[in-house]
Length: 200
Image 1 (cartoon, rainbow, N blue to C red):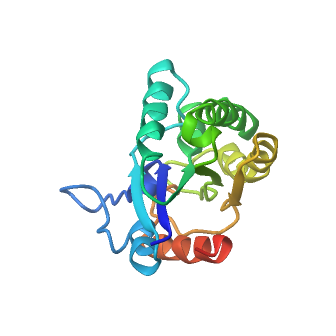
Image 2 (cartoon, one colour; image 1 turned 90 degrees about the vertical axis):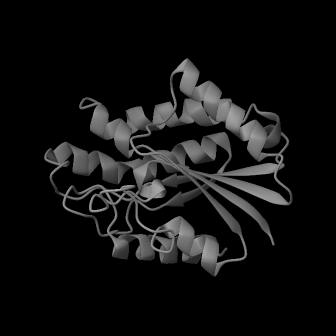
């Protein structure tokens, strides 16, 4: 087995399904992380959390750093994929893509101080989330614009910080009625696109 990929994200990594009244989650074989776990030789660990924004408070950053210390003990190579930013836009009406990127840059710089990432035993990849679409949660034109702009802003900080980057902002991933969460088809398409882009 090549190693482990830690997928650190929000509800679109978790696999949120509003139609599931029990767990509120698509089955593993529907989620993009589960598809990659089944169809590649990598061990894919899903660390998505519904509602997660980019860690920026003392407690959330500390918890993320504690997790990194644990993850770097995994055998073989370890990749950490970070895909966040949508909730930061949704929760902060005045935020632009630039504001979100600044928050992400501070977070990544702090993570990279941890031994696993500082030594390059772990490798970090920043993923710009797919752009939102018009829907029940996306009722302001500026949300559409700023979510599309995350890709170019994240690319800039990935270069500055020195981490790998994947821009999913232009992938046109199908969403449910809210304009934010992936449909089942969206999860399949995301898995296909990320395999094409990263060649795992």
